[in-house]
Length: 125
Image (cartoon, rainbow, N blue to C red; front, top):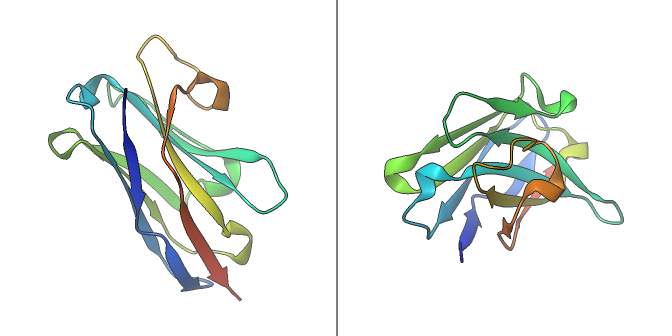
């Protein structure tokens, strides 16, 4: 069982930046593909970004391209989401997720087996 713990959320003004972190308990973290999703009140959970276990592939939702960057540090069992130029519509709970290498469509929510509890990001106008 993979345990995921997100951190780094908070309140920021529009145009500001935040870096989210997700620490994984799994010793074989380097073999997991990782993703970030977000859920705003009253809305479905949406894809934000993902990075493959091999580091060769990263994926972003269209509205995040050029503003968000996903990265990982396998030595620290941690995946990051750097969020720049934040907008009020980025306000949501952000979730980290993990899946095994056999899952390749890592931009899809159903590909993920493990989820964190989420961290709140609030962007004020």
